[in-house]
Structures are given as structure tokens and as C-alpha cells.
Image (tube, rainbow, N blue to C red):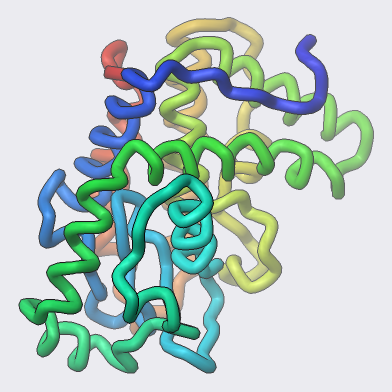
Length: 251
């Protein structure tokens, strides 16, 4: 069994493909989709991974990740617009303000930055996965820790499995944040891996991962507050899970 640390070595060409795939999943591959604020939500969703950005002074049940992405981009040489370097939080306080400013110079500069840094955003998502496994295992009993680690590597041993793990942890998180649950039931990567029990490698591992993810997300919708209308999102989520089963998922 591999060592507890997990280092994903992906060549640049595969990182670019991974970035394009995630961009398609989250934004349909469009430039406009790189800057979104979904109806009923309290935050902007930005970049290929729809990284969450709350307005200054606000927080919510979902983990904010856009500030960390900006820091990552700067560390790797990306030049941010001046206004973005001084923002403490999302400069648009509401979805209405965001939509009214959608065609502004500031928004165009943000989309240009995000369109030009797709490979870096993909690498950021991969690094999030690399750090996720130790955190997911830390709070588990020894037997459960071994089982979850085994299922993680069972999926990760093939390129399509790396895509599935990377995409899901970006899509729904690790499953560790206390606020990210409904009725005590979380929906992150940890919960998906805990729902797996098989041993066969290859396609069966990807199939079981997708099936477990479907159960986890279905349970999330069933537990969700009615006013969030999450049942409307489930068909799209299931389409995304289908890409984990496909033999070309890493292409």
C-alpha cells in the first residue's frame, strides 16, 4: 500500500486537460461562467472550480476557497489586477450588485485572469486533493482509517480515478467542515469513500465511486432545507457523476 502522503504527479498536458474538464463541468467551458453568483446563494462562485468568495465580513456553511486560489496564483507568477490585490472580501455585496456589474471593466479583468490561469487553477485543485487524505484520515478509528485509505488508492491508481477524486473534492469538498452538513450528514469526499466496500480495481472502482457519490448527494438533497430547492440541482449533479464512469474521464 502506498505511504500515507499522497503526491499526484501529473504532466503539464494532463493538467491542462484536467482544467478544461473541470471548467466544462462547472462553467460549460464558457468565459462568462467563470464569474457566477447562483440564485439563492450568499456568495460568488469564481473560476473553473466555482471557488467560493463571500462578501467582506460574511461567512456561511460552505468553505471559502477563492482567497486561497488568489494567493496560489500570485505565488506562481500570475499578475492580479490592482483592485483584486486589495480586496478583503468579495467586492459585490449581493447577487444583484454582482449581476448589475457583470459587464464592467472590473468583471472583464477578473474573467481574463481566470481564463488565462486554467492550468494553475487545476494544479491548485490537485494540491487541495493532496492535502485532503491526511485530514480525512486524522479523525477516524484505525480500522476505518485503513478502509478509507484503501478505497482512496483503489480509485486513485488510474488516471480516470485521479480526475474523479480531484473533481469531487473540488465539487463538494472533503466532508470535514462542521458547518457543511444537513441533519448531521455531510456530503464530501470522505463520505463517498466511507460508502465504498469493494476490492476490484479498474472500472469497478470508478463505478462504485460514482454510485457512492450518487447516494451521498441524494441524501444531501433529502436533508436540505426546502427553501434551497436542491432537488433542482440533482439531475445536473448526476450528469457530472457519469463522467467519473467514462473511460475517457481523464481526457
